[in-house]
Structure formats: C-alpha cells, structure tokens
View: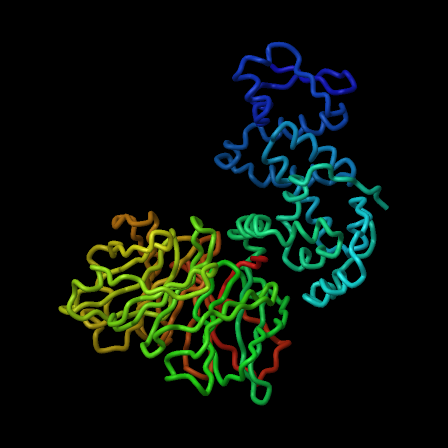
Length: 159
Length: 375
C-alpha cells in the first residue's frame, strides 16, 4: 500500500498496483522515495478521492479486454466525467501533475466535447479569456471561413 | 451557468484543443490573439493531425458531383460502417484563377488532395496543364510549380516526409522513359531524380495499375511491368529519395496477361488501408484484395477478400473500418451509377449513400476518405 496526502492534510491508502498508473508516483517508488507518506501539495482531498476512484477502477485495464469488461469500463468513464466544469479542471490539473495519461485523455476529451459547439463568446467566458483582437482582425478570421461561424449546433450559452 | 476556469498551462490547453474538430478550431481563432497564434502554429497543426488520423469521427468522405448547367461541386460527409452519415456539407470550391474544362482528383494524403486541371492549353487529355493541392477542411489551396517536361503520360503521388517535415509530390513517367521528378513543397521547384538502376535494368518498363502512387511507411509504391511478363512492386523512399522493391505475394499472378482470366478485362491496383499497403485486382466476376500486414515482409501478405464483382468493371477499396469491414466502390457503368458496398469477406452489403438533399439529376463521381485537419 502507498499513502498519499492531500494539501488539506488528509491521508489515503492506495494499492500499489493502482497508484503506479501515475508515472510520477511510479518513478518515486522505483527510486525508493515512497517509503512513507507522499505529500501532494497541489491536490485537495475532494479531487484526490476522484482520482483514486479512477485508479481503483482502472487497476485491471489489461485484464478488461480478456474478461469482456470493456463495456463496464466505458460506462464508468462516461459516468466519471459527468462532473462540473470546475471539478473537471481540478481533475485535469491533478492528472497532469501526477502524470496519469489515460485519465488526462479522458478528461481533456470531455472538456473538448463541452467546448466543441460553443460560440466564441461562450468559450471566452468559460475559460476567462479577454478578447485582445481588434474588430478588423476578428472580421478577417470570419471571412477566411464563414461556414465555421454558422450552423444550428452553435451554442452561445455558458453551461 | 458555470464559473470560468483559467487554464494556467498552455500544454493542457493544447491537449484539449487537439481533440476539437476543424470547424470549432477555425471559429476559436477568434477567441484571442494567443489562441489564433496557437491554432495557426505548424506544430499544433501536426499534433492535431496525428490525433485525428486514425479516429473515425475525423474521417470524412469527399465526392464530387456534376450536374447539368451547374457544373461541378464537392461535398463531404461523415462515414460509419453502416453508411454515409447525412451531415453533408457543400465545400467551398478551390479557387483557381484560370478557366478550365475538366479536373481530376489524383489522390489524397492526410487532409490534402492533389488535383490536376485541364485547360485549353493542356497538351493532351492525359496530362493536366496545372496541378494544385487543396485542403477541403480549411478551403486553402496552393498551385504547384509548372512541370519541366509535361509531354509524358505521368502518374502522381502525394506523401508526407517526416524527416524534412514536408509534403512531397512524385511524378513518374508511365513508360519509364523520362526521369522521374519530385517536388518538395518547401523547395518550390521540381527536381529530376537521377536515373536509377532499378529502372534501367529491364528492357522496357511500363507501369500498370491504377493511377496514383500510394504512400505508406515513408515510401511511394507502384506496380511495374517488364518484358517477359515479369511484374514487380517498386518503391521510392520519400526521405532518402532512393528506389527499392517490395516482394509481391507468393504464388499470385497480379498482371492481366498471365492471369487465368486473361480473356476478360482485368483491373489491378494498389492502395493503403489502415496504414497497410494493399493490392487488388478484379474482372467482372471476381474481386481479390491482399494486404501486407508487416511492411516489406513477403510472408505477411494476407488475402483479405475474394468476393463477387457483381458485374462491376472496376472496384476500388476506399477505407477499412475498425471492425474489419472494407468500404468498396463499384463502377457498374461508366456514366450511370456508382455503388458502395462494405465487405469483410463473409458478409457483403450495400453501404447506403443517402444524399436526398443533392439534386437527383446530379452525377456522383468517385469518392475519397480523408482526415479532416488543419495542415
């Protein structure tokens, strides 16, 4: 078992087979630096619980294909990313820090799916971006590909 | 209502944006100066393409149509193993300044198409007077420099050279008389390739098979046909620019003359399916398809399909879905009709091509599967 500590001082025990999906922790274990508690100063307990939930479910990823549990895992993944926008980014930041490739892919795909049909205005709001393009520059981009700005799927709401 | 999130690391933003379709990316160039710069960056474009390459939802089916009075149009739509998806989009025609009376789509590589244009100045019906590259996803196009020796009948191939990070166009003289020429896009001019030994050893070299040079595993490929019925699979490395030869399947006769079906018209060709080189032939009775599972290894040639031609004079493989089904195009009658079917060798069915929105008087011509991408 490996002990992880969140930035709000909560400790969690995780099986080694699960936790080594994190490249960062795997390297620490290999280098013999994981003998006591591993402090994770960037991750709060709420996010860490989500990450551990994912790691435990994906522990037997290789086996899933053999035992026909792929659908089950797919369903879990779909449920897993069903979380708020802020929460999703907390998990993305944690997955990036811990270097968990599959989790990063899953969450970035979910973020992309949520952004895909958004209007420019909605994207700016969802990602706190200030527009620094001039009106002429914007118009030039629109003129290059007007069809990219048209279509019934384009969604101006922020949710 | 969600609270906005600030993404602190560009690396994470890149991970998210590479998963977006082209339409979203072209729109999101308007988000800010830094997004515009990022989305226009060649490194980002390549990363996006590599992500998109083998994902079905980034594959699009492009076909061109001719309709009386209206001329030609290009359309694209998504595809699934069960049929063409009804999300047609009429594409912005490539902007070509010279008036022309005909064009020919040679091939596509990633998101780019190589197209030849015939104008009044064309020397013959076989040689276009102008070539250009077109990315239908972004509607950007680029006219290629003029060819040095336009009198021969040529075959063209388009490929990506990862070593020089550049696309290259190869022109091969079908009769094997004139030197081959290559164009690296960054260099901006055609260059003659030294007469190679492989092409001077035989007495009389002609190329047979369909008209484009499939590029896979860093090389262009074509079927050569020498005297004494000797056939060969020749290759040209896109990075080293050297010729080579790939073994053909054992105990298989590819060329029409020596086939036991020699009294019927036979079509032979090569293509690429899921990054694997494939070889096919057909007459009006039977169609055969082989793939080379491990590049360059003769024993890895595997017969994928042997199916009825359903009377078609020409059958071309277009795409192989992840479930193993191969999408095939049947040309039943030169003008009248084209049919698409899918087959995995065991079951063979019509691939519905529902295009009710397109004028019924329109003639739908050949189609291509390409990757929707920015580059």
